[in-house]
Image 1 (cartoon, rainbow, N blue to C red):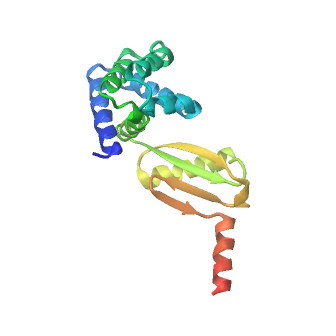
Image 2: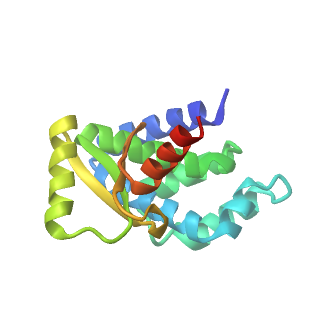
Image 3: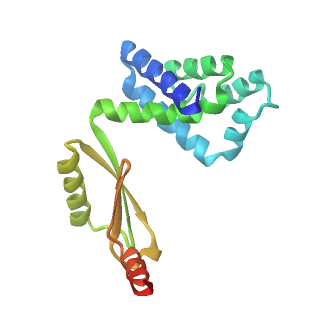
Length: 178
């Protein structure tokens, strides 16, 4: 079975358990915290994925880092995952949980990359365009990329609108070469 399939199964089980215990929002915050911690600490993910590090050591690492910072439900899942020798996919499980949570809450994440920071009216316009197109609440992540020269690249799920000047110049270059 692929990693994403297994991660999705664990995430579904976790979201069901969290709903039973009425702690979905808390577990969501825990999964965001886990993802952020893992992204910022490469050593943590290397240790969790390493076949050389014993499972009791991995559990001790997770206990030291997360036991007092996450809910008992989340920590229990970390323990179960470790006992099932699935520590290597914990990050994927957290990602899948966040996706499931967003789906249940009607949230869509959009990433806007522009050559300079967005103004408040422009940010609101992008959010309303995405909300109107998807019918969902929008969480907009902004990124700045000076290489774009101007324009923007908007990504919502697997769809992308590239209205950057860099892309237009590349298209023009290809047209002139043909």
